[in-house]
Length: 289
Picture 1 (tube, rainbow, N blue to C red):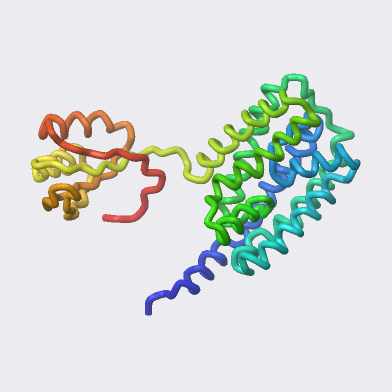
Picture 2: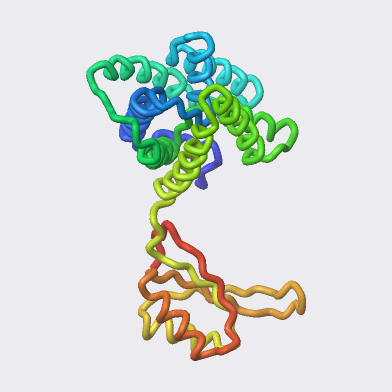
């Protein structure tokens, strides 16, 4: 009996539940350490709930953990109202646990001192470790909630792209932070956001060790034989039809280790000088015979 969509979702949720929660706690703990030991002393506002907490602490001397908790709960309630229980459930644990960890780790700053005079090094470190922590959390299927909830609501109600609304919201927070903490901090924040995004993708997808080739050639049998017999890799063939001339062609799909990229490209060009092929990274290759 085939699995229905709800059954699949439940299986995914229950899969490796304990290890997923352990990874979530580790990711949140790393984020809390970064916030208290590096972000708070340097006053680098990189957007998000952390940025709001820094601003509220500077303006009204409010406790960072309480601000994070209060803003996160408000956003979670908005998520329940506009996005539903299913979309909100993944962020509940982080909403409660993260501000608690921020509060607990804040007491350690009095015993551990980190030199923050080299701001470039600090910005790079925050970007790398922060991206790793976020990637680790997203990879477990959880979410930290926060301001992305607003972007999701705007997309659902007004079809505003999440990327654009997120850029506007976080950009506004960063610029406000620059007004209070200096415009140099804005430049450091941009470095952090860029590195954070890059590292997050690497943690989520991994480093690609394989290339996927989509090959269209008039010498499909010869190319197939070259890949299978000489390179010792399998080939999948499927029929396509060109959009302009509407001619039926065959596409050869093969996945090969990146180190063999040169042998594949040069080999198929020798077989067919007019070959058309598309190459892309293959981050995860599983199964098949």
